[in-house]
Image 1 (cartoon, helix red, strand yellow):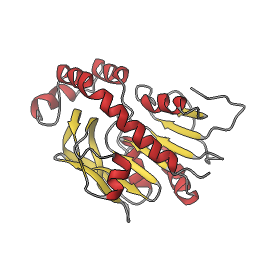
Image 2 (cartoon, rainbow, N blue to C red):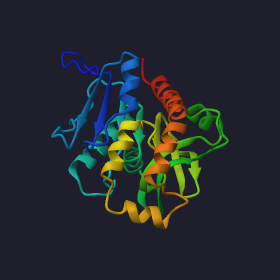
Image 3 (tube, helix red, strand yellow):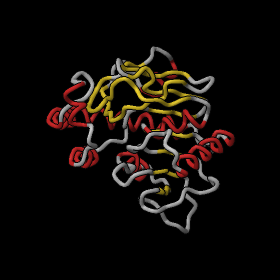
Image 4 (tube, rainbow, N blue to C red):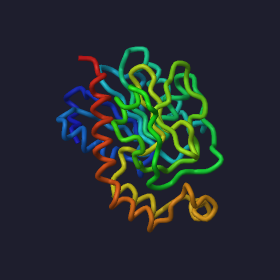
Amino acid sequence: MTTDNTLDPEVLVLQHLLEDGPGYLGQWLDGEGLRWRVLCTEAGDAFPAALGGIRGLAVLGGAWSANDPRPSLRQAEALIREADARGIPVLGHCLGGQLIARALGGRVARLPQPEIGWLPIQRADSALAREWLGDDPRPVVYQWHQDSFVQLPAGAQVLASSPACAHQAFALRQHLAMQFHIEITPDKISDWLEQPDDAYAVQVLLHRNSVQDPATQRAGTARHLGASQVLAAHIYSRWRERWAV
């Protein structure tokens, strides 16, 4: 990770929980030779009061609800609003996408059923959706969520949906909010499956059409990870194209 404190980072990554790190996003940033810094609330890092001279902001996921009364979540939303005002592109993964929605005037709520595992999404048939998400109309992506952005900020455009989640991704100005985990890696999936939350075993039984058991998830990782990382690199490149020169 290129985190030399003597240099100003080009990218700031906001992490909430120890088990939900940058994953493939960090690999991509390193591969591009970019200077980036990650701050993790659970590790004791404080999010900054202001963004400084960064060019891109990424906000990661986590098991918390975006509606939880946690000061770090409200600070993340303040930084998203600052980025929006300054024209800095924000990229939100799962909880991070929900925080973009809340920060810019949308609403986050619990869905009737969760999505967990490797599941297809339906890409919208629009130029903007193809620009952000590529040409595959039904990519398979990794999900682990029950909340979602149920009301979008004014002017946002839906880019993808699924049967359980009407808003899988939206774009607004220079920003992209995703409900899925495009940064996923095999290590992250293994960590999550080793210590799932208490509700997971019940959810597997109640929602077989949207919640996969561990064996199905591991088989899906072998089958879908390569295409997922190709899509991730595409999304991250579109995000980078929006950075100010």
